[in-house]
Image 1 (spheres, rainbow, N blue to C red):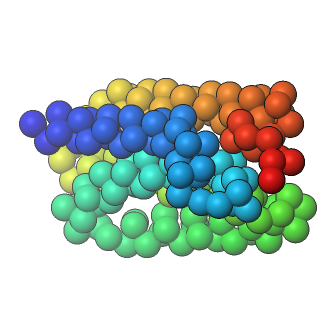
Image 2: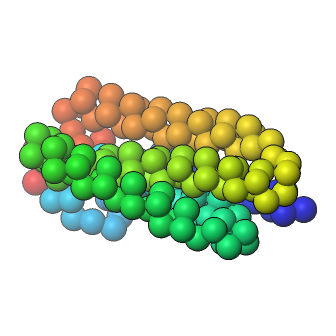
Length: 171
């Protein structure tokens, strides 16, 4: 039952992430002024980060259940260090938008570390390991959908010489 609910929650988060990515131009146009239209390029990694946060939370709950919260600290520390290093390097090279993508990488590291630690602890504590391959496949498919949305928006805007489908020179 818990597994079914967890998968349903992850499915919901994945759908929300993909929809936020797909609707990014419209969301930004409604909520922001023209100066912020560039924000569509950071919506996909932010949406994917929301999904990955749900994945890491699911596995951190397992670590909390087994009273092994030190592993949550380890994975969070590793992800934070990765984020700091990537921000230091990438923001200087690519500008402020790189922060969204470096944070996405840190979320991937966080979720991956918590999956590994949770599986290790659960195996040690219970003697069995649940097959989480469906979770991994679901995560890969969701991140791929976000990537496709990024590419669609990038190609659309590059071809129209605009941001969010609206002319840059619009007054």
